[in-house]
Amino acid sequence: MQFPSRSPEDTQNLGRRIGRLLQAGDILLLFGDLGAGKTTLIQGIAQGMEVPPDQYVRSPSFTLINEYRGRLPIYHIDLYRIESADEMADLGLEDYLFGEGVTLIEWGEKLFPEQKTDQPPLIPINNRVEIRLEIGGETDRTLSLSPYPQASASHPLFALQ
Ligand SMILES: Nc1ncnc2c1ncn2[C@@H]1O[C@H](COP(=O)(O)OP(=O)(O)OP(=O)(O)O)[C@@H](O)[C@H]1O
Ligand SMILES: [Mg+2]
Image (cartoon, rainbow, N blue to C red; front, side, top):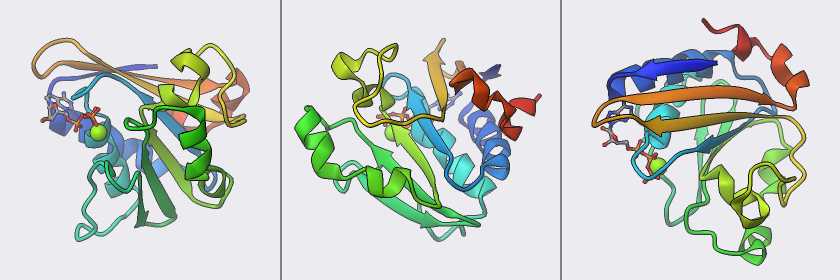
């Protein structure tokens, strides 16, 4: 499923639509270069999940994990600074991933050995939604959503038009 975006607002709008459809236990992995719009999309998702505007959504660069309270708990994780499987293990991601909240991970490629997303991830995440953001121009982006494994395509998210 592909969505064009022509502005940060477009990306946030799509995020809001995604956020309304997320369910307890959902895991979203976001892939895309610096400035592709991962955090921008997550700001929209947080709004769609009814996070109050006074909970500021920004990249958890130093803390690595931010937590917001919307209609479900949201764990916003940024793996940009993670450089090894050991550092990944120290984060204790399992505590978040397999809880009752929704987990949103920037730089999802870091979860994979040598960042190869066609291999099994370092942490056994069975069902997930992968979102790829591609930069087409200054304000042009293409966002692609795919279920993994294919069986998760029954998620309401994949009825988005
Ligand atoms: N269509 C668009 N969608 C999203 N962001 C856009 C778009 N057009 C321009 N931008 C700009 O691109 C930047 C995206 O920044 P953002 O922090 O969301 O990216 P990111 O993928 O989280 O980067 P990082 O890897 O550094 O965390 C913002 O400055 C935003 O204004
Ligand atoms: Mg970011």
